[in-house]
Image 1 (spheres, rainbow, N blue to C red):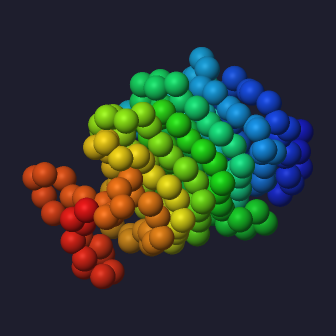
Image 2 (image 1 turned 90 degrees about the horizontal axis):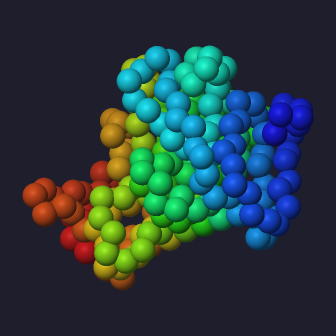
Length: 220
Protein backbone atom coordinates (compact mmCIF):
# COMPACT_ATOMS: atom_id res chain seq x y z
CA UNK A 1 0.00 0.00 0.00
CA UNK A 2 2.79 2.43 0.88
CA UNK A 3 4.72 1.68 -2.31
CA UNK A 4 1.90 1.86 -4.87
CA UNK A 5 1.41 5.04 -6.88
CA UNK A 6 -1.69 7.17 -6.45
CA UNK A 7 -4.62 5.62 -8.36
CA UNK A 8 -2.71 2.32 -8.56
CA UNK A 9 -3.72 -1.27 -7.81
CA UNK A 10 -2.56 -3.55 -5.00
CA UNK A 11 -3.13 -7.28 -5.62
CA UNK A 12 -3.13 -9.38 -2.45
CA UNK A 13 -2.27 -13.05 -2.91
CA UNK A 14 -4.13 -15.85 -1.17
CA UNK A 15 -3.06 -16.28 2.43
CA UNK A 16 -3.87 -15.31 6.00
CA UNK A 17 -2.80 -11.83 7.11
CA UNK A 18 -2.87 -10.73 10.74
CA UNK A 19 -2.69 -6.98 10.36
CA UNK A 20 -4.40 -3.61 10.20
CA UNK A 21 -4.44 -1.83 6.83
CA UNK A 22 -4.34 1.98 6.63
CA UNK A 23 -5.01 3.66 3.28
CA UNK A 24 -4.81 7.42 2.68
CA UNK A 25 -4.34 7.56 -1.09
CA UNK A 26 -6.52 6.63 -4.07
CA UNK A 27 -6.03 2.96 -4.96
CA UNK A 28 -7.70 -0.42 -5.49
CA UNK A 29 -7.04 -3.14 -2.91
CA UNK A 30 -7.95 -6.44 -4.59
CA UNK A 31 -7.81 -9.79 -2.84
CA UNK A 32 -7.28 -13.02 -4.72
CA UNK A 33 -9.48 -15.98 -3.80
CA UNK A 34 -8.33 -17.09 -0.37
CA UNK A 35 -7.01 -13.70 0.81
CA UNK A 36 -7.99 -13.44 4.49
CA UNK A 37 -7.38 -10.65 7.00
CA UNK A 38 -7.76 -11.36 10.71
CA UNK A 39 -8.12 -8.70 13.39
CA UNK A 40 -4.94 -8.76 15.48
CA UNK A 41 -3.55 -6.15 17.89
CA UNK A 42 -5.69 -3.42 16.39
CA UNK A 43 -4.82 0.21 17.07
CA UNK A 44 -7.65 2.67 17.69
CA UNK A 45 -7.94 6.12 16.12
CA UNK A 46 -9.78 9.40 16.43
CA UNK A 47 -10.70 11.79 13.62
CA UNK A 48 -10.04 15.53 13.85
CA UNK A 49 -9.60 15.32 17.63
CA UNK A 50 -13.14 14.06 18.19
CA UNK A 51 -13.99 11.99 21.23
CA UNK A 52 -15.20 9.06 19.09
CA UNK A 53 -12.76 6.16 18.94
CA UNK A 54 -12.59 3.89 15.89
CA UNK A 55 -11.00 0.43 15.76
CA UNK A 56 -10.98 -0.69 12.10
CA UNK A 57 -9.17 -3.50 10.32
CA UNK A 58 -9.15 -1.63 7.00
CA UNK A 59 -9.13 2.14 7.59
CA UNK A 60 -9.52 4.32 4.49
CA UNK A 61 -9.23 8.06 5.12
CA UNK A 62 -8.38 11.28 3.28
CA UNK A 63 -5.84 13.10 5.39
CA UNK A 64 -2.75 12.47 7.47
CA UNK A 65 -2.06 10.75 10.77
CA UNK A 66 -0.84 12.71 13.74
CA UNK A 67 -0.15 9.95 16.24
CA UNK A 68 -3.46 8.13 16.52
CA UNK A 69 -5.53 11.08 15.25
CA UNK A 70 -6.53 11.62 11.61
CA UNK A 71 -6.36 15.19 10.37
CA UNK A 72 -8.85 15.27 7.48
CA UNK A 73 -7.84 16.78 4.15
CA UNK A 74 -9.66 16.44 0.82
CA UNK A 75 -11.04 13.20 -0.61
CA UNK A 76 -9.64 9.97 -2.03
CA UNK A 77 -11.16 7.15 -4.07
CA UNK A 78 -10.64 3.56 -2.91
CA UNK A 79 -11.95 0.13 -3.92
CA UNK A 80 -11.74 -2.81 -1.50
CA UNK A 81 -12.71 -6.11 -3.14
CA UNK A 82 -12.39 -9.82 -2.59
CA UNK A 83 -11.36 -10.36 1.05
CA UNK A 84 -12.49 -12.48 3.94
CA UNK A 85 -12.18 -10.27 7.03
CA UNK A 86 -12.58 -11.88 10.45
CA UNK A 87 -13.01 -9.77 13.57
CA UNK A 88 -12.81 -12.63 16.08
CA UNK A 89 -15.50 -10.76 18.07
CA UNK A 90 -13.06 -7.97 18.99
CA UNK A 91 -15.08 -5.38 20.97
CA UNK A 92 -16.12 -2.24 19.01
CA UNK A 93 -14.21 -3.41 15.94
CA UNK A 94 -15.02 -2.30 12.38
CA UNK A 95 -14.09 -4.41 9.35
CA UNK A 96 -13.93 -1.51 6.85
CA UNK A 97 -14.12 2.20 7.68
CA UNK A 98 -14.34 4.85 4.93
CA UNK A 99 -13.83 8.49 5.96
CA UNK A 100 -14.00 11.27 3.34
CA UNK A 101 -13.82 8.86 0.40
CA UNK A 102 -15.20 9.81 -3.01
CA UNK A 103 -15.04 8.24 -6.46
CA UNK A 104 -12.37 9.79 -8.66
CA UNK A 105 -9.50 8.12 -10.49
CA UNK A 106 -10.49 5.07 -8.43
CA UNK A 107 -14.18 4.29 -7.84
CA UNK A 108 -15.43 4.25 -4.26
CA UNK A 109 -16.53 0.60 -4.00
CA UNK A 110 -16.66 -2.07 -1.29
CA UNK A 111 -17.50 -5.38 -2.95
CA UNK A 112 -17.23 -9.17 -2.83
CA UNK A 113 -15.99 -9.30 0.76
CA UNK A 114 -16.98 -11.79 3.47
CA UNK A 115 -17.06 -10.02 6.83
CA UNK A 116 -17.41 -12.14 9.97
CA UNK A 117 -17.80 -11.47 13.69
CA UNK A 118 -17.46 -7.69 13.91
CA UNK A 119 -19.51 -5.29 15.99
CA UNK A 120 -19.64 -3.09 12.86
CA UNK A 121 -19.16 -4.54 9.41
CA UNK A 122 -18.81 -1.46 7.19
CA UNK A 123 -18.89 2.17 8.32
CA UNK A 124 -19.26 5.07 5.88
CA UNK A 125 -18.34 8.37 7.55
CA UNK A 126 -17.92 12.09 7.00
CA UNK A 127 -17.79 13.64 3.53
CA UNK A 128 -17.82 10.27 1.76
CA UNK A 129 -19.73 10.51 -1.54
CA UNK A 130 -20.70 8.27 -4.44
CA UNK A 131 -20.03 4.97 -2.67
CA UNK A 132 -21.24 1.53 -3.76
CA UNK A 133 -21.45 -1.38 -1.31
CA UNK A 134 -22.34 -4.56 -3.19
CA UNK A 135 -22.06 -8.34 -3.19
CA UNK A 136 -20.68 -8.53 0.34
CA UNK A 137 -21.56 -11.13 2.95
CA UNK A 138 -21.73 -9.73 6.50
CA UNK A 139 -22.55 -12.26 9.19
CA UNK A 140 -22.32 -13.28 12.85
CA UNK A 141 -22.96 -16.50 14.79
CA UNK A 142 -26.55 -17.42 15.55
CA UNK A 143 -28.28 -15.75 18.50
CA UNK A 144 -26.09 -12.61 18.39
CA UNK A 145 -27.63 -9.23 19.17
CA UNK A 146 -26.92 -5.53 18.56
CA UNK A 147 -24.36 -5.94 15.78
CA UNK A 148 -24.47 -3.53 12.81
CA UNK A 149 -23.74 -4.60 9.24
CA UNK A 150 -23.56 -1.16 7.60
CA UNK A 151 -23.35 2.11 9.56
CA UNK A 152 -23.57 5.57 7.98
CA UNK A 153 -22.36 8.47 10.14
CA UNK A 154 -21.48 12.16 9.91
CA UNK A 155 -18.40 13.96 11.18
CA UNK A 156 -17.45 17.63 11.21
CA UNK A 157 -21.02 18.47 10.16
CA UNK A 158 -20.50 16.59 6.88
CA UNK A 159 -22.71 13.67 5.86
CA UNK A 160 -22.13 10.82 3.40
CA UNK A 161 -24.23 11.11 0.25
CA UNK A 162 -25.13 8.89 -2.71
CA UNK A 163 -24.53 5.63 -0.86
CA UNK A 164 -25.70 2.60 -2.88
CA UNK A 165 -26.17 -0.72 -1.04
CA UNK A 166 -27.14 -3.66 -3.28
CA UNK A 167 -27.00 -7.46 -3.48
CA UNK A 168 -25.45 -7.93 -0.04
CA UNK A 169 -26.12 -10.90 2.25
CA UNK A 170 -26.61 -9.37 5.67
CA UNK A 171 -26.93 -11.32 8.92
CA UNK A 172 -28.34 -14.75 9.62
CA UNK A 173 -31.58 -16.08 10.96
CA UNK A 174 -31.89 -16.44 14.74
CA UNK A 175 -30.27 -13.09 15.47
CA UNK A 176 -31.35 -9.58 16.40
CA UNK A 177 -28.96 -7.23 14.65
CA UNK A 178 -29.11 -4.12 12.45
CA UNK A 179 -28.72 -4.41 8.67
CA UNK A 180 -28.29 -0.74 7.71
CA UNK A 181 -28.19 2.00 10.34
CA UNK A 182 -28.32 5.35 8.58
CA UNK A 183 -27.67 8.10 11.12
CA UNK A 184 -27.68 10.98 8.60
CA UNK A 185 -30.42 12.84 6.76
CA UNK A 186 -29.31 11.80 3.24
CA UNK A 187 -31.13 8.70 1.99
CA UNK A 188 -29.12 5.54 1.30
CA UNK A 189 -30.42 3.47 -1.61
CA UNK A 190 -30.54 -0.16 -0.44
CA UNK A 191 -32.15 -2.75 -2.74
CA UNK A 192 -31.93 -6.48 -3.49
CA UNK A 193 -30.21 -7.32 -0.21
CA UNK A 194 -30.80 -10.39 1.97
CA UNK A 195 -31.78 -9.17 5.43
CA UNK A 196 -31.34 -12.34 7.49
CA UNK A 197 -34.84 -13.77 6.96
CA UNK A 198 -36.92 -14.84 3.96
CA UNK A 199 -39.59 -12.22 4.68
CA UNK A 200 -37.18 -9.29 4.88
CA UNK A 201 -36.12 -6.89 7.63
CA UNK A 202 -38.08 -6.24 10.81
CA UNK A 203 -38.55 -3.11 12.87
CA UNK A 204 -37.42 -2.81 16.50
CA UNK A 205 -40.05 -3.78 19.05
CA UNK A 206 -40.49 -0.20 20.27
CA UNK A 207 -40.86 1.51 16.87
CA UNK A 208 -41.83 0.92 13.25
CA UNK A 209 -39.38 1.64 10.43
CA UNK A 210 -40.43 2.39 6.87
CA UNK A 211 -38.68 2.41 3.51
CA UNK A 212 -37.94 6.06 2.72
CA UNK A 213 -38.94 5.66 -0.94
CA UNK A 214 -41.78 3.11 -1.00
CA UNK A 215 -42.98 3.80 2.58
CA UNK A 216 -43.35 0.05 3.07
CA UNK A 217 -43.23 -1.04 6.69
CA UNK A 218 -40.31 -3.21 7.77
CA UNK A 219 -42.46 -6.03 9.12
CA UNK A 220 -40.45 -9.20 8.34
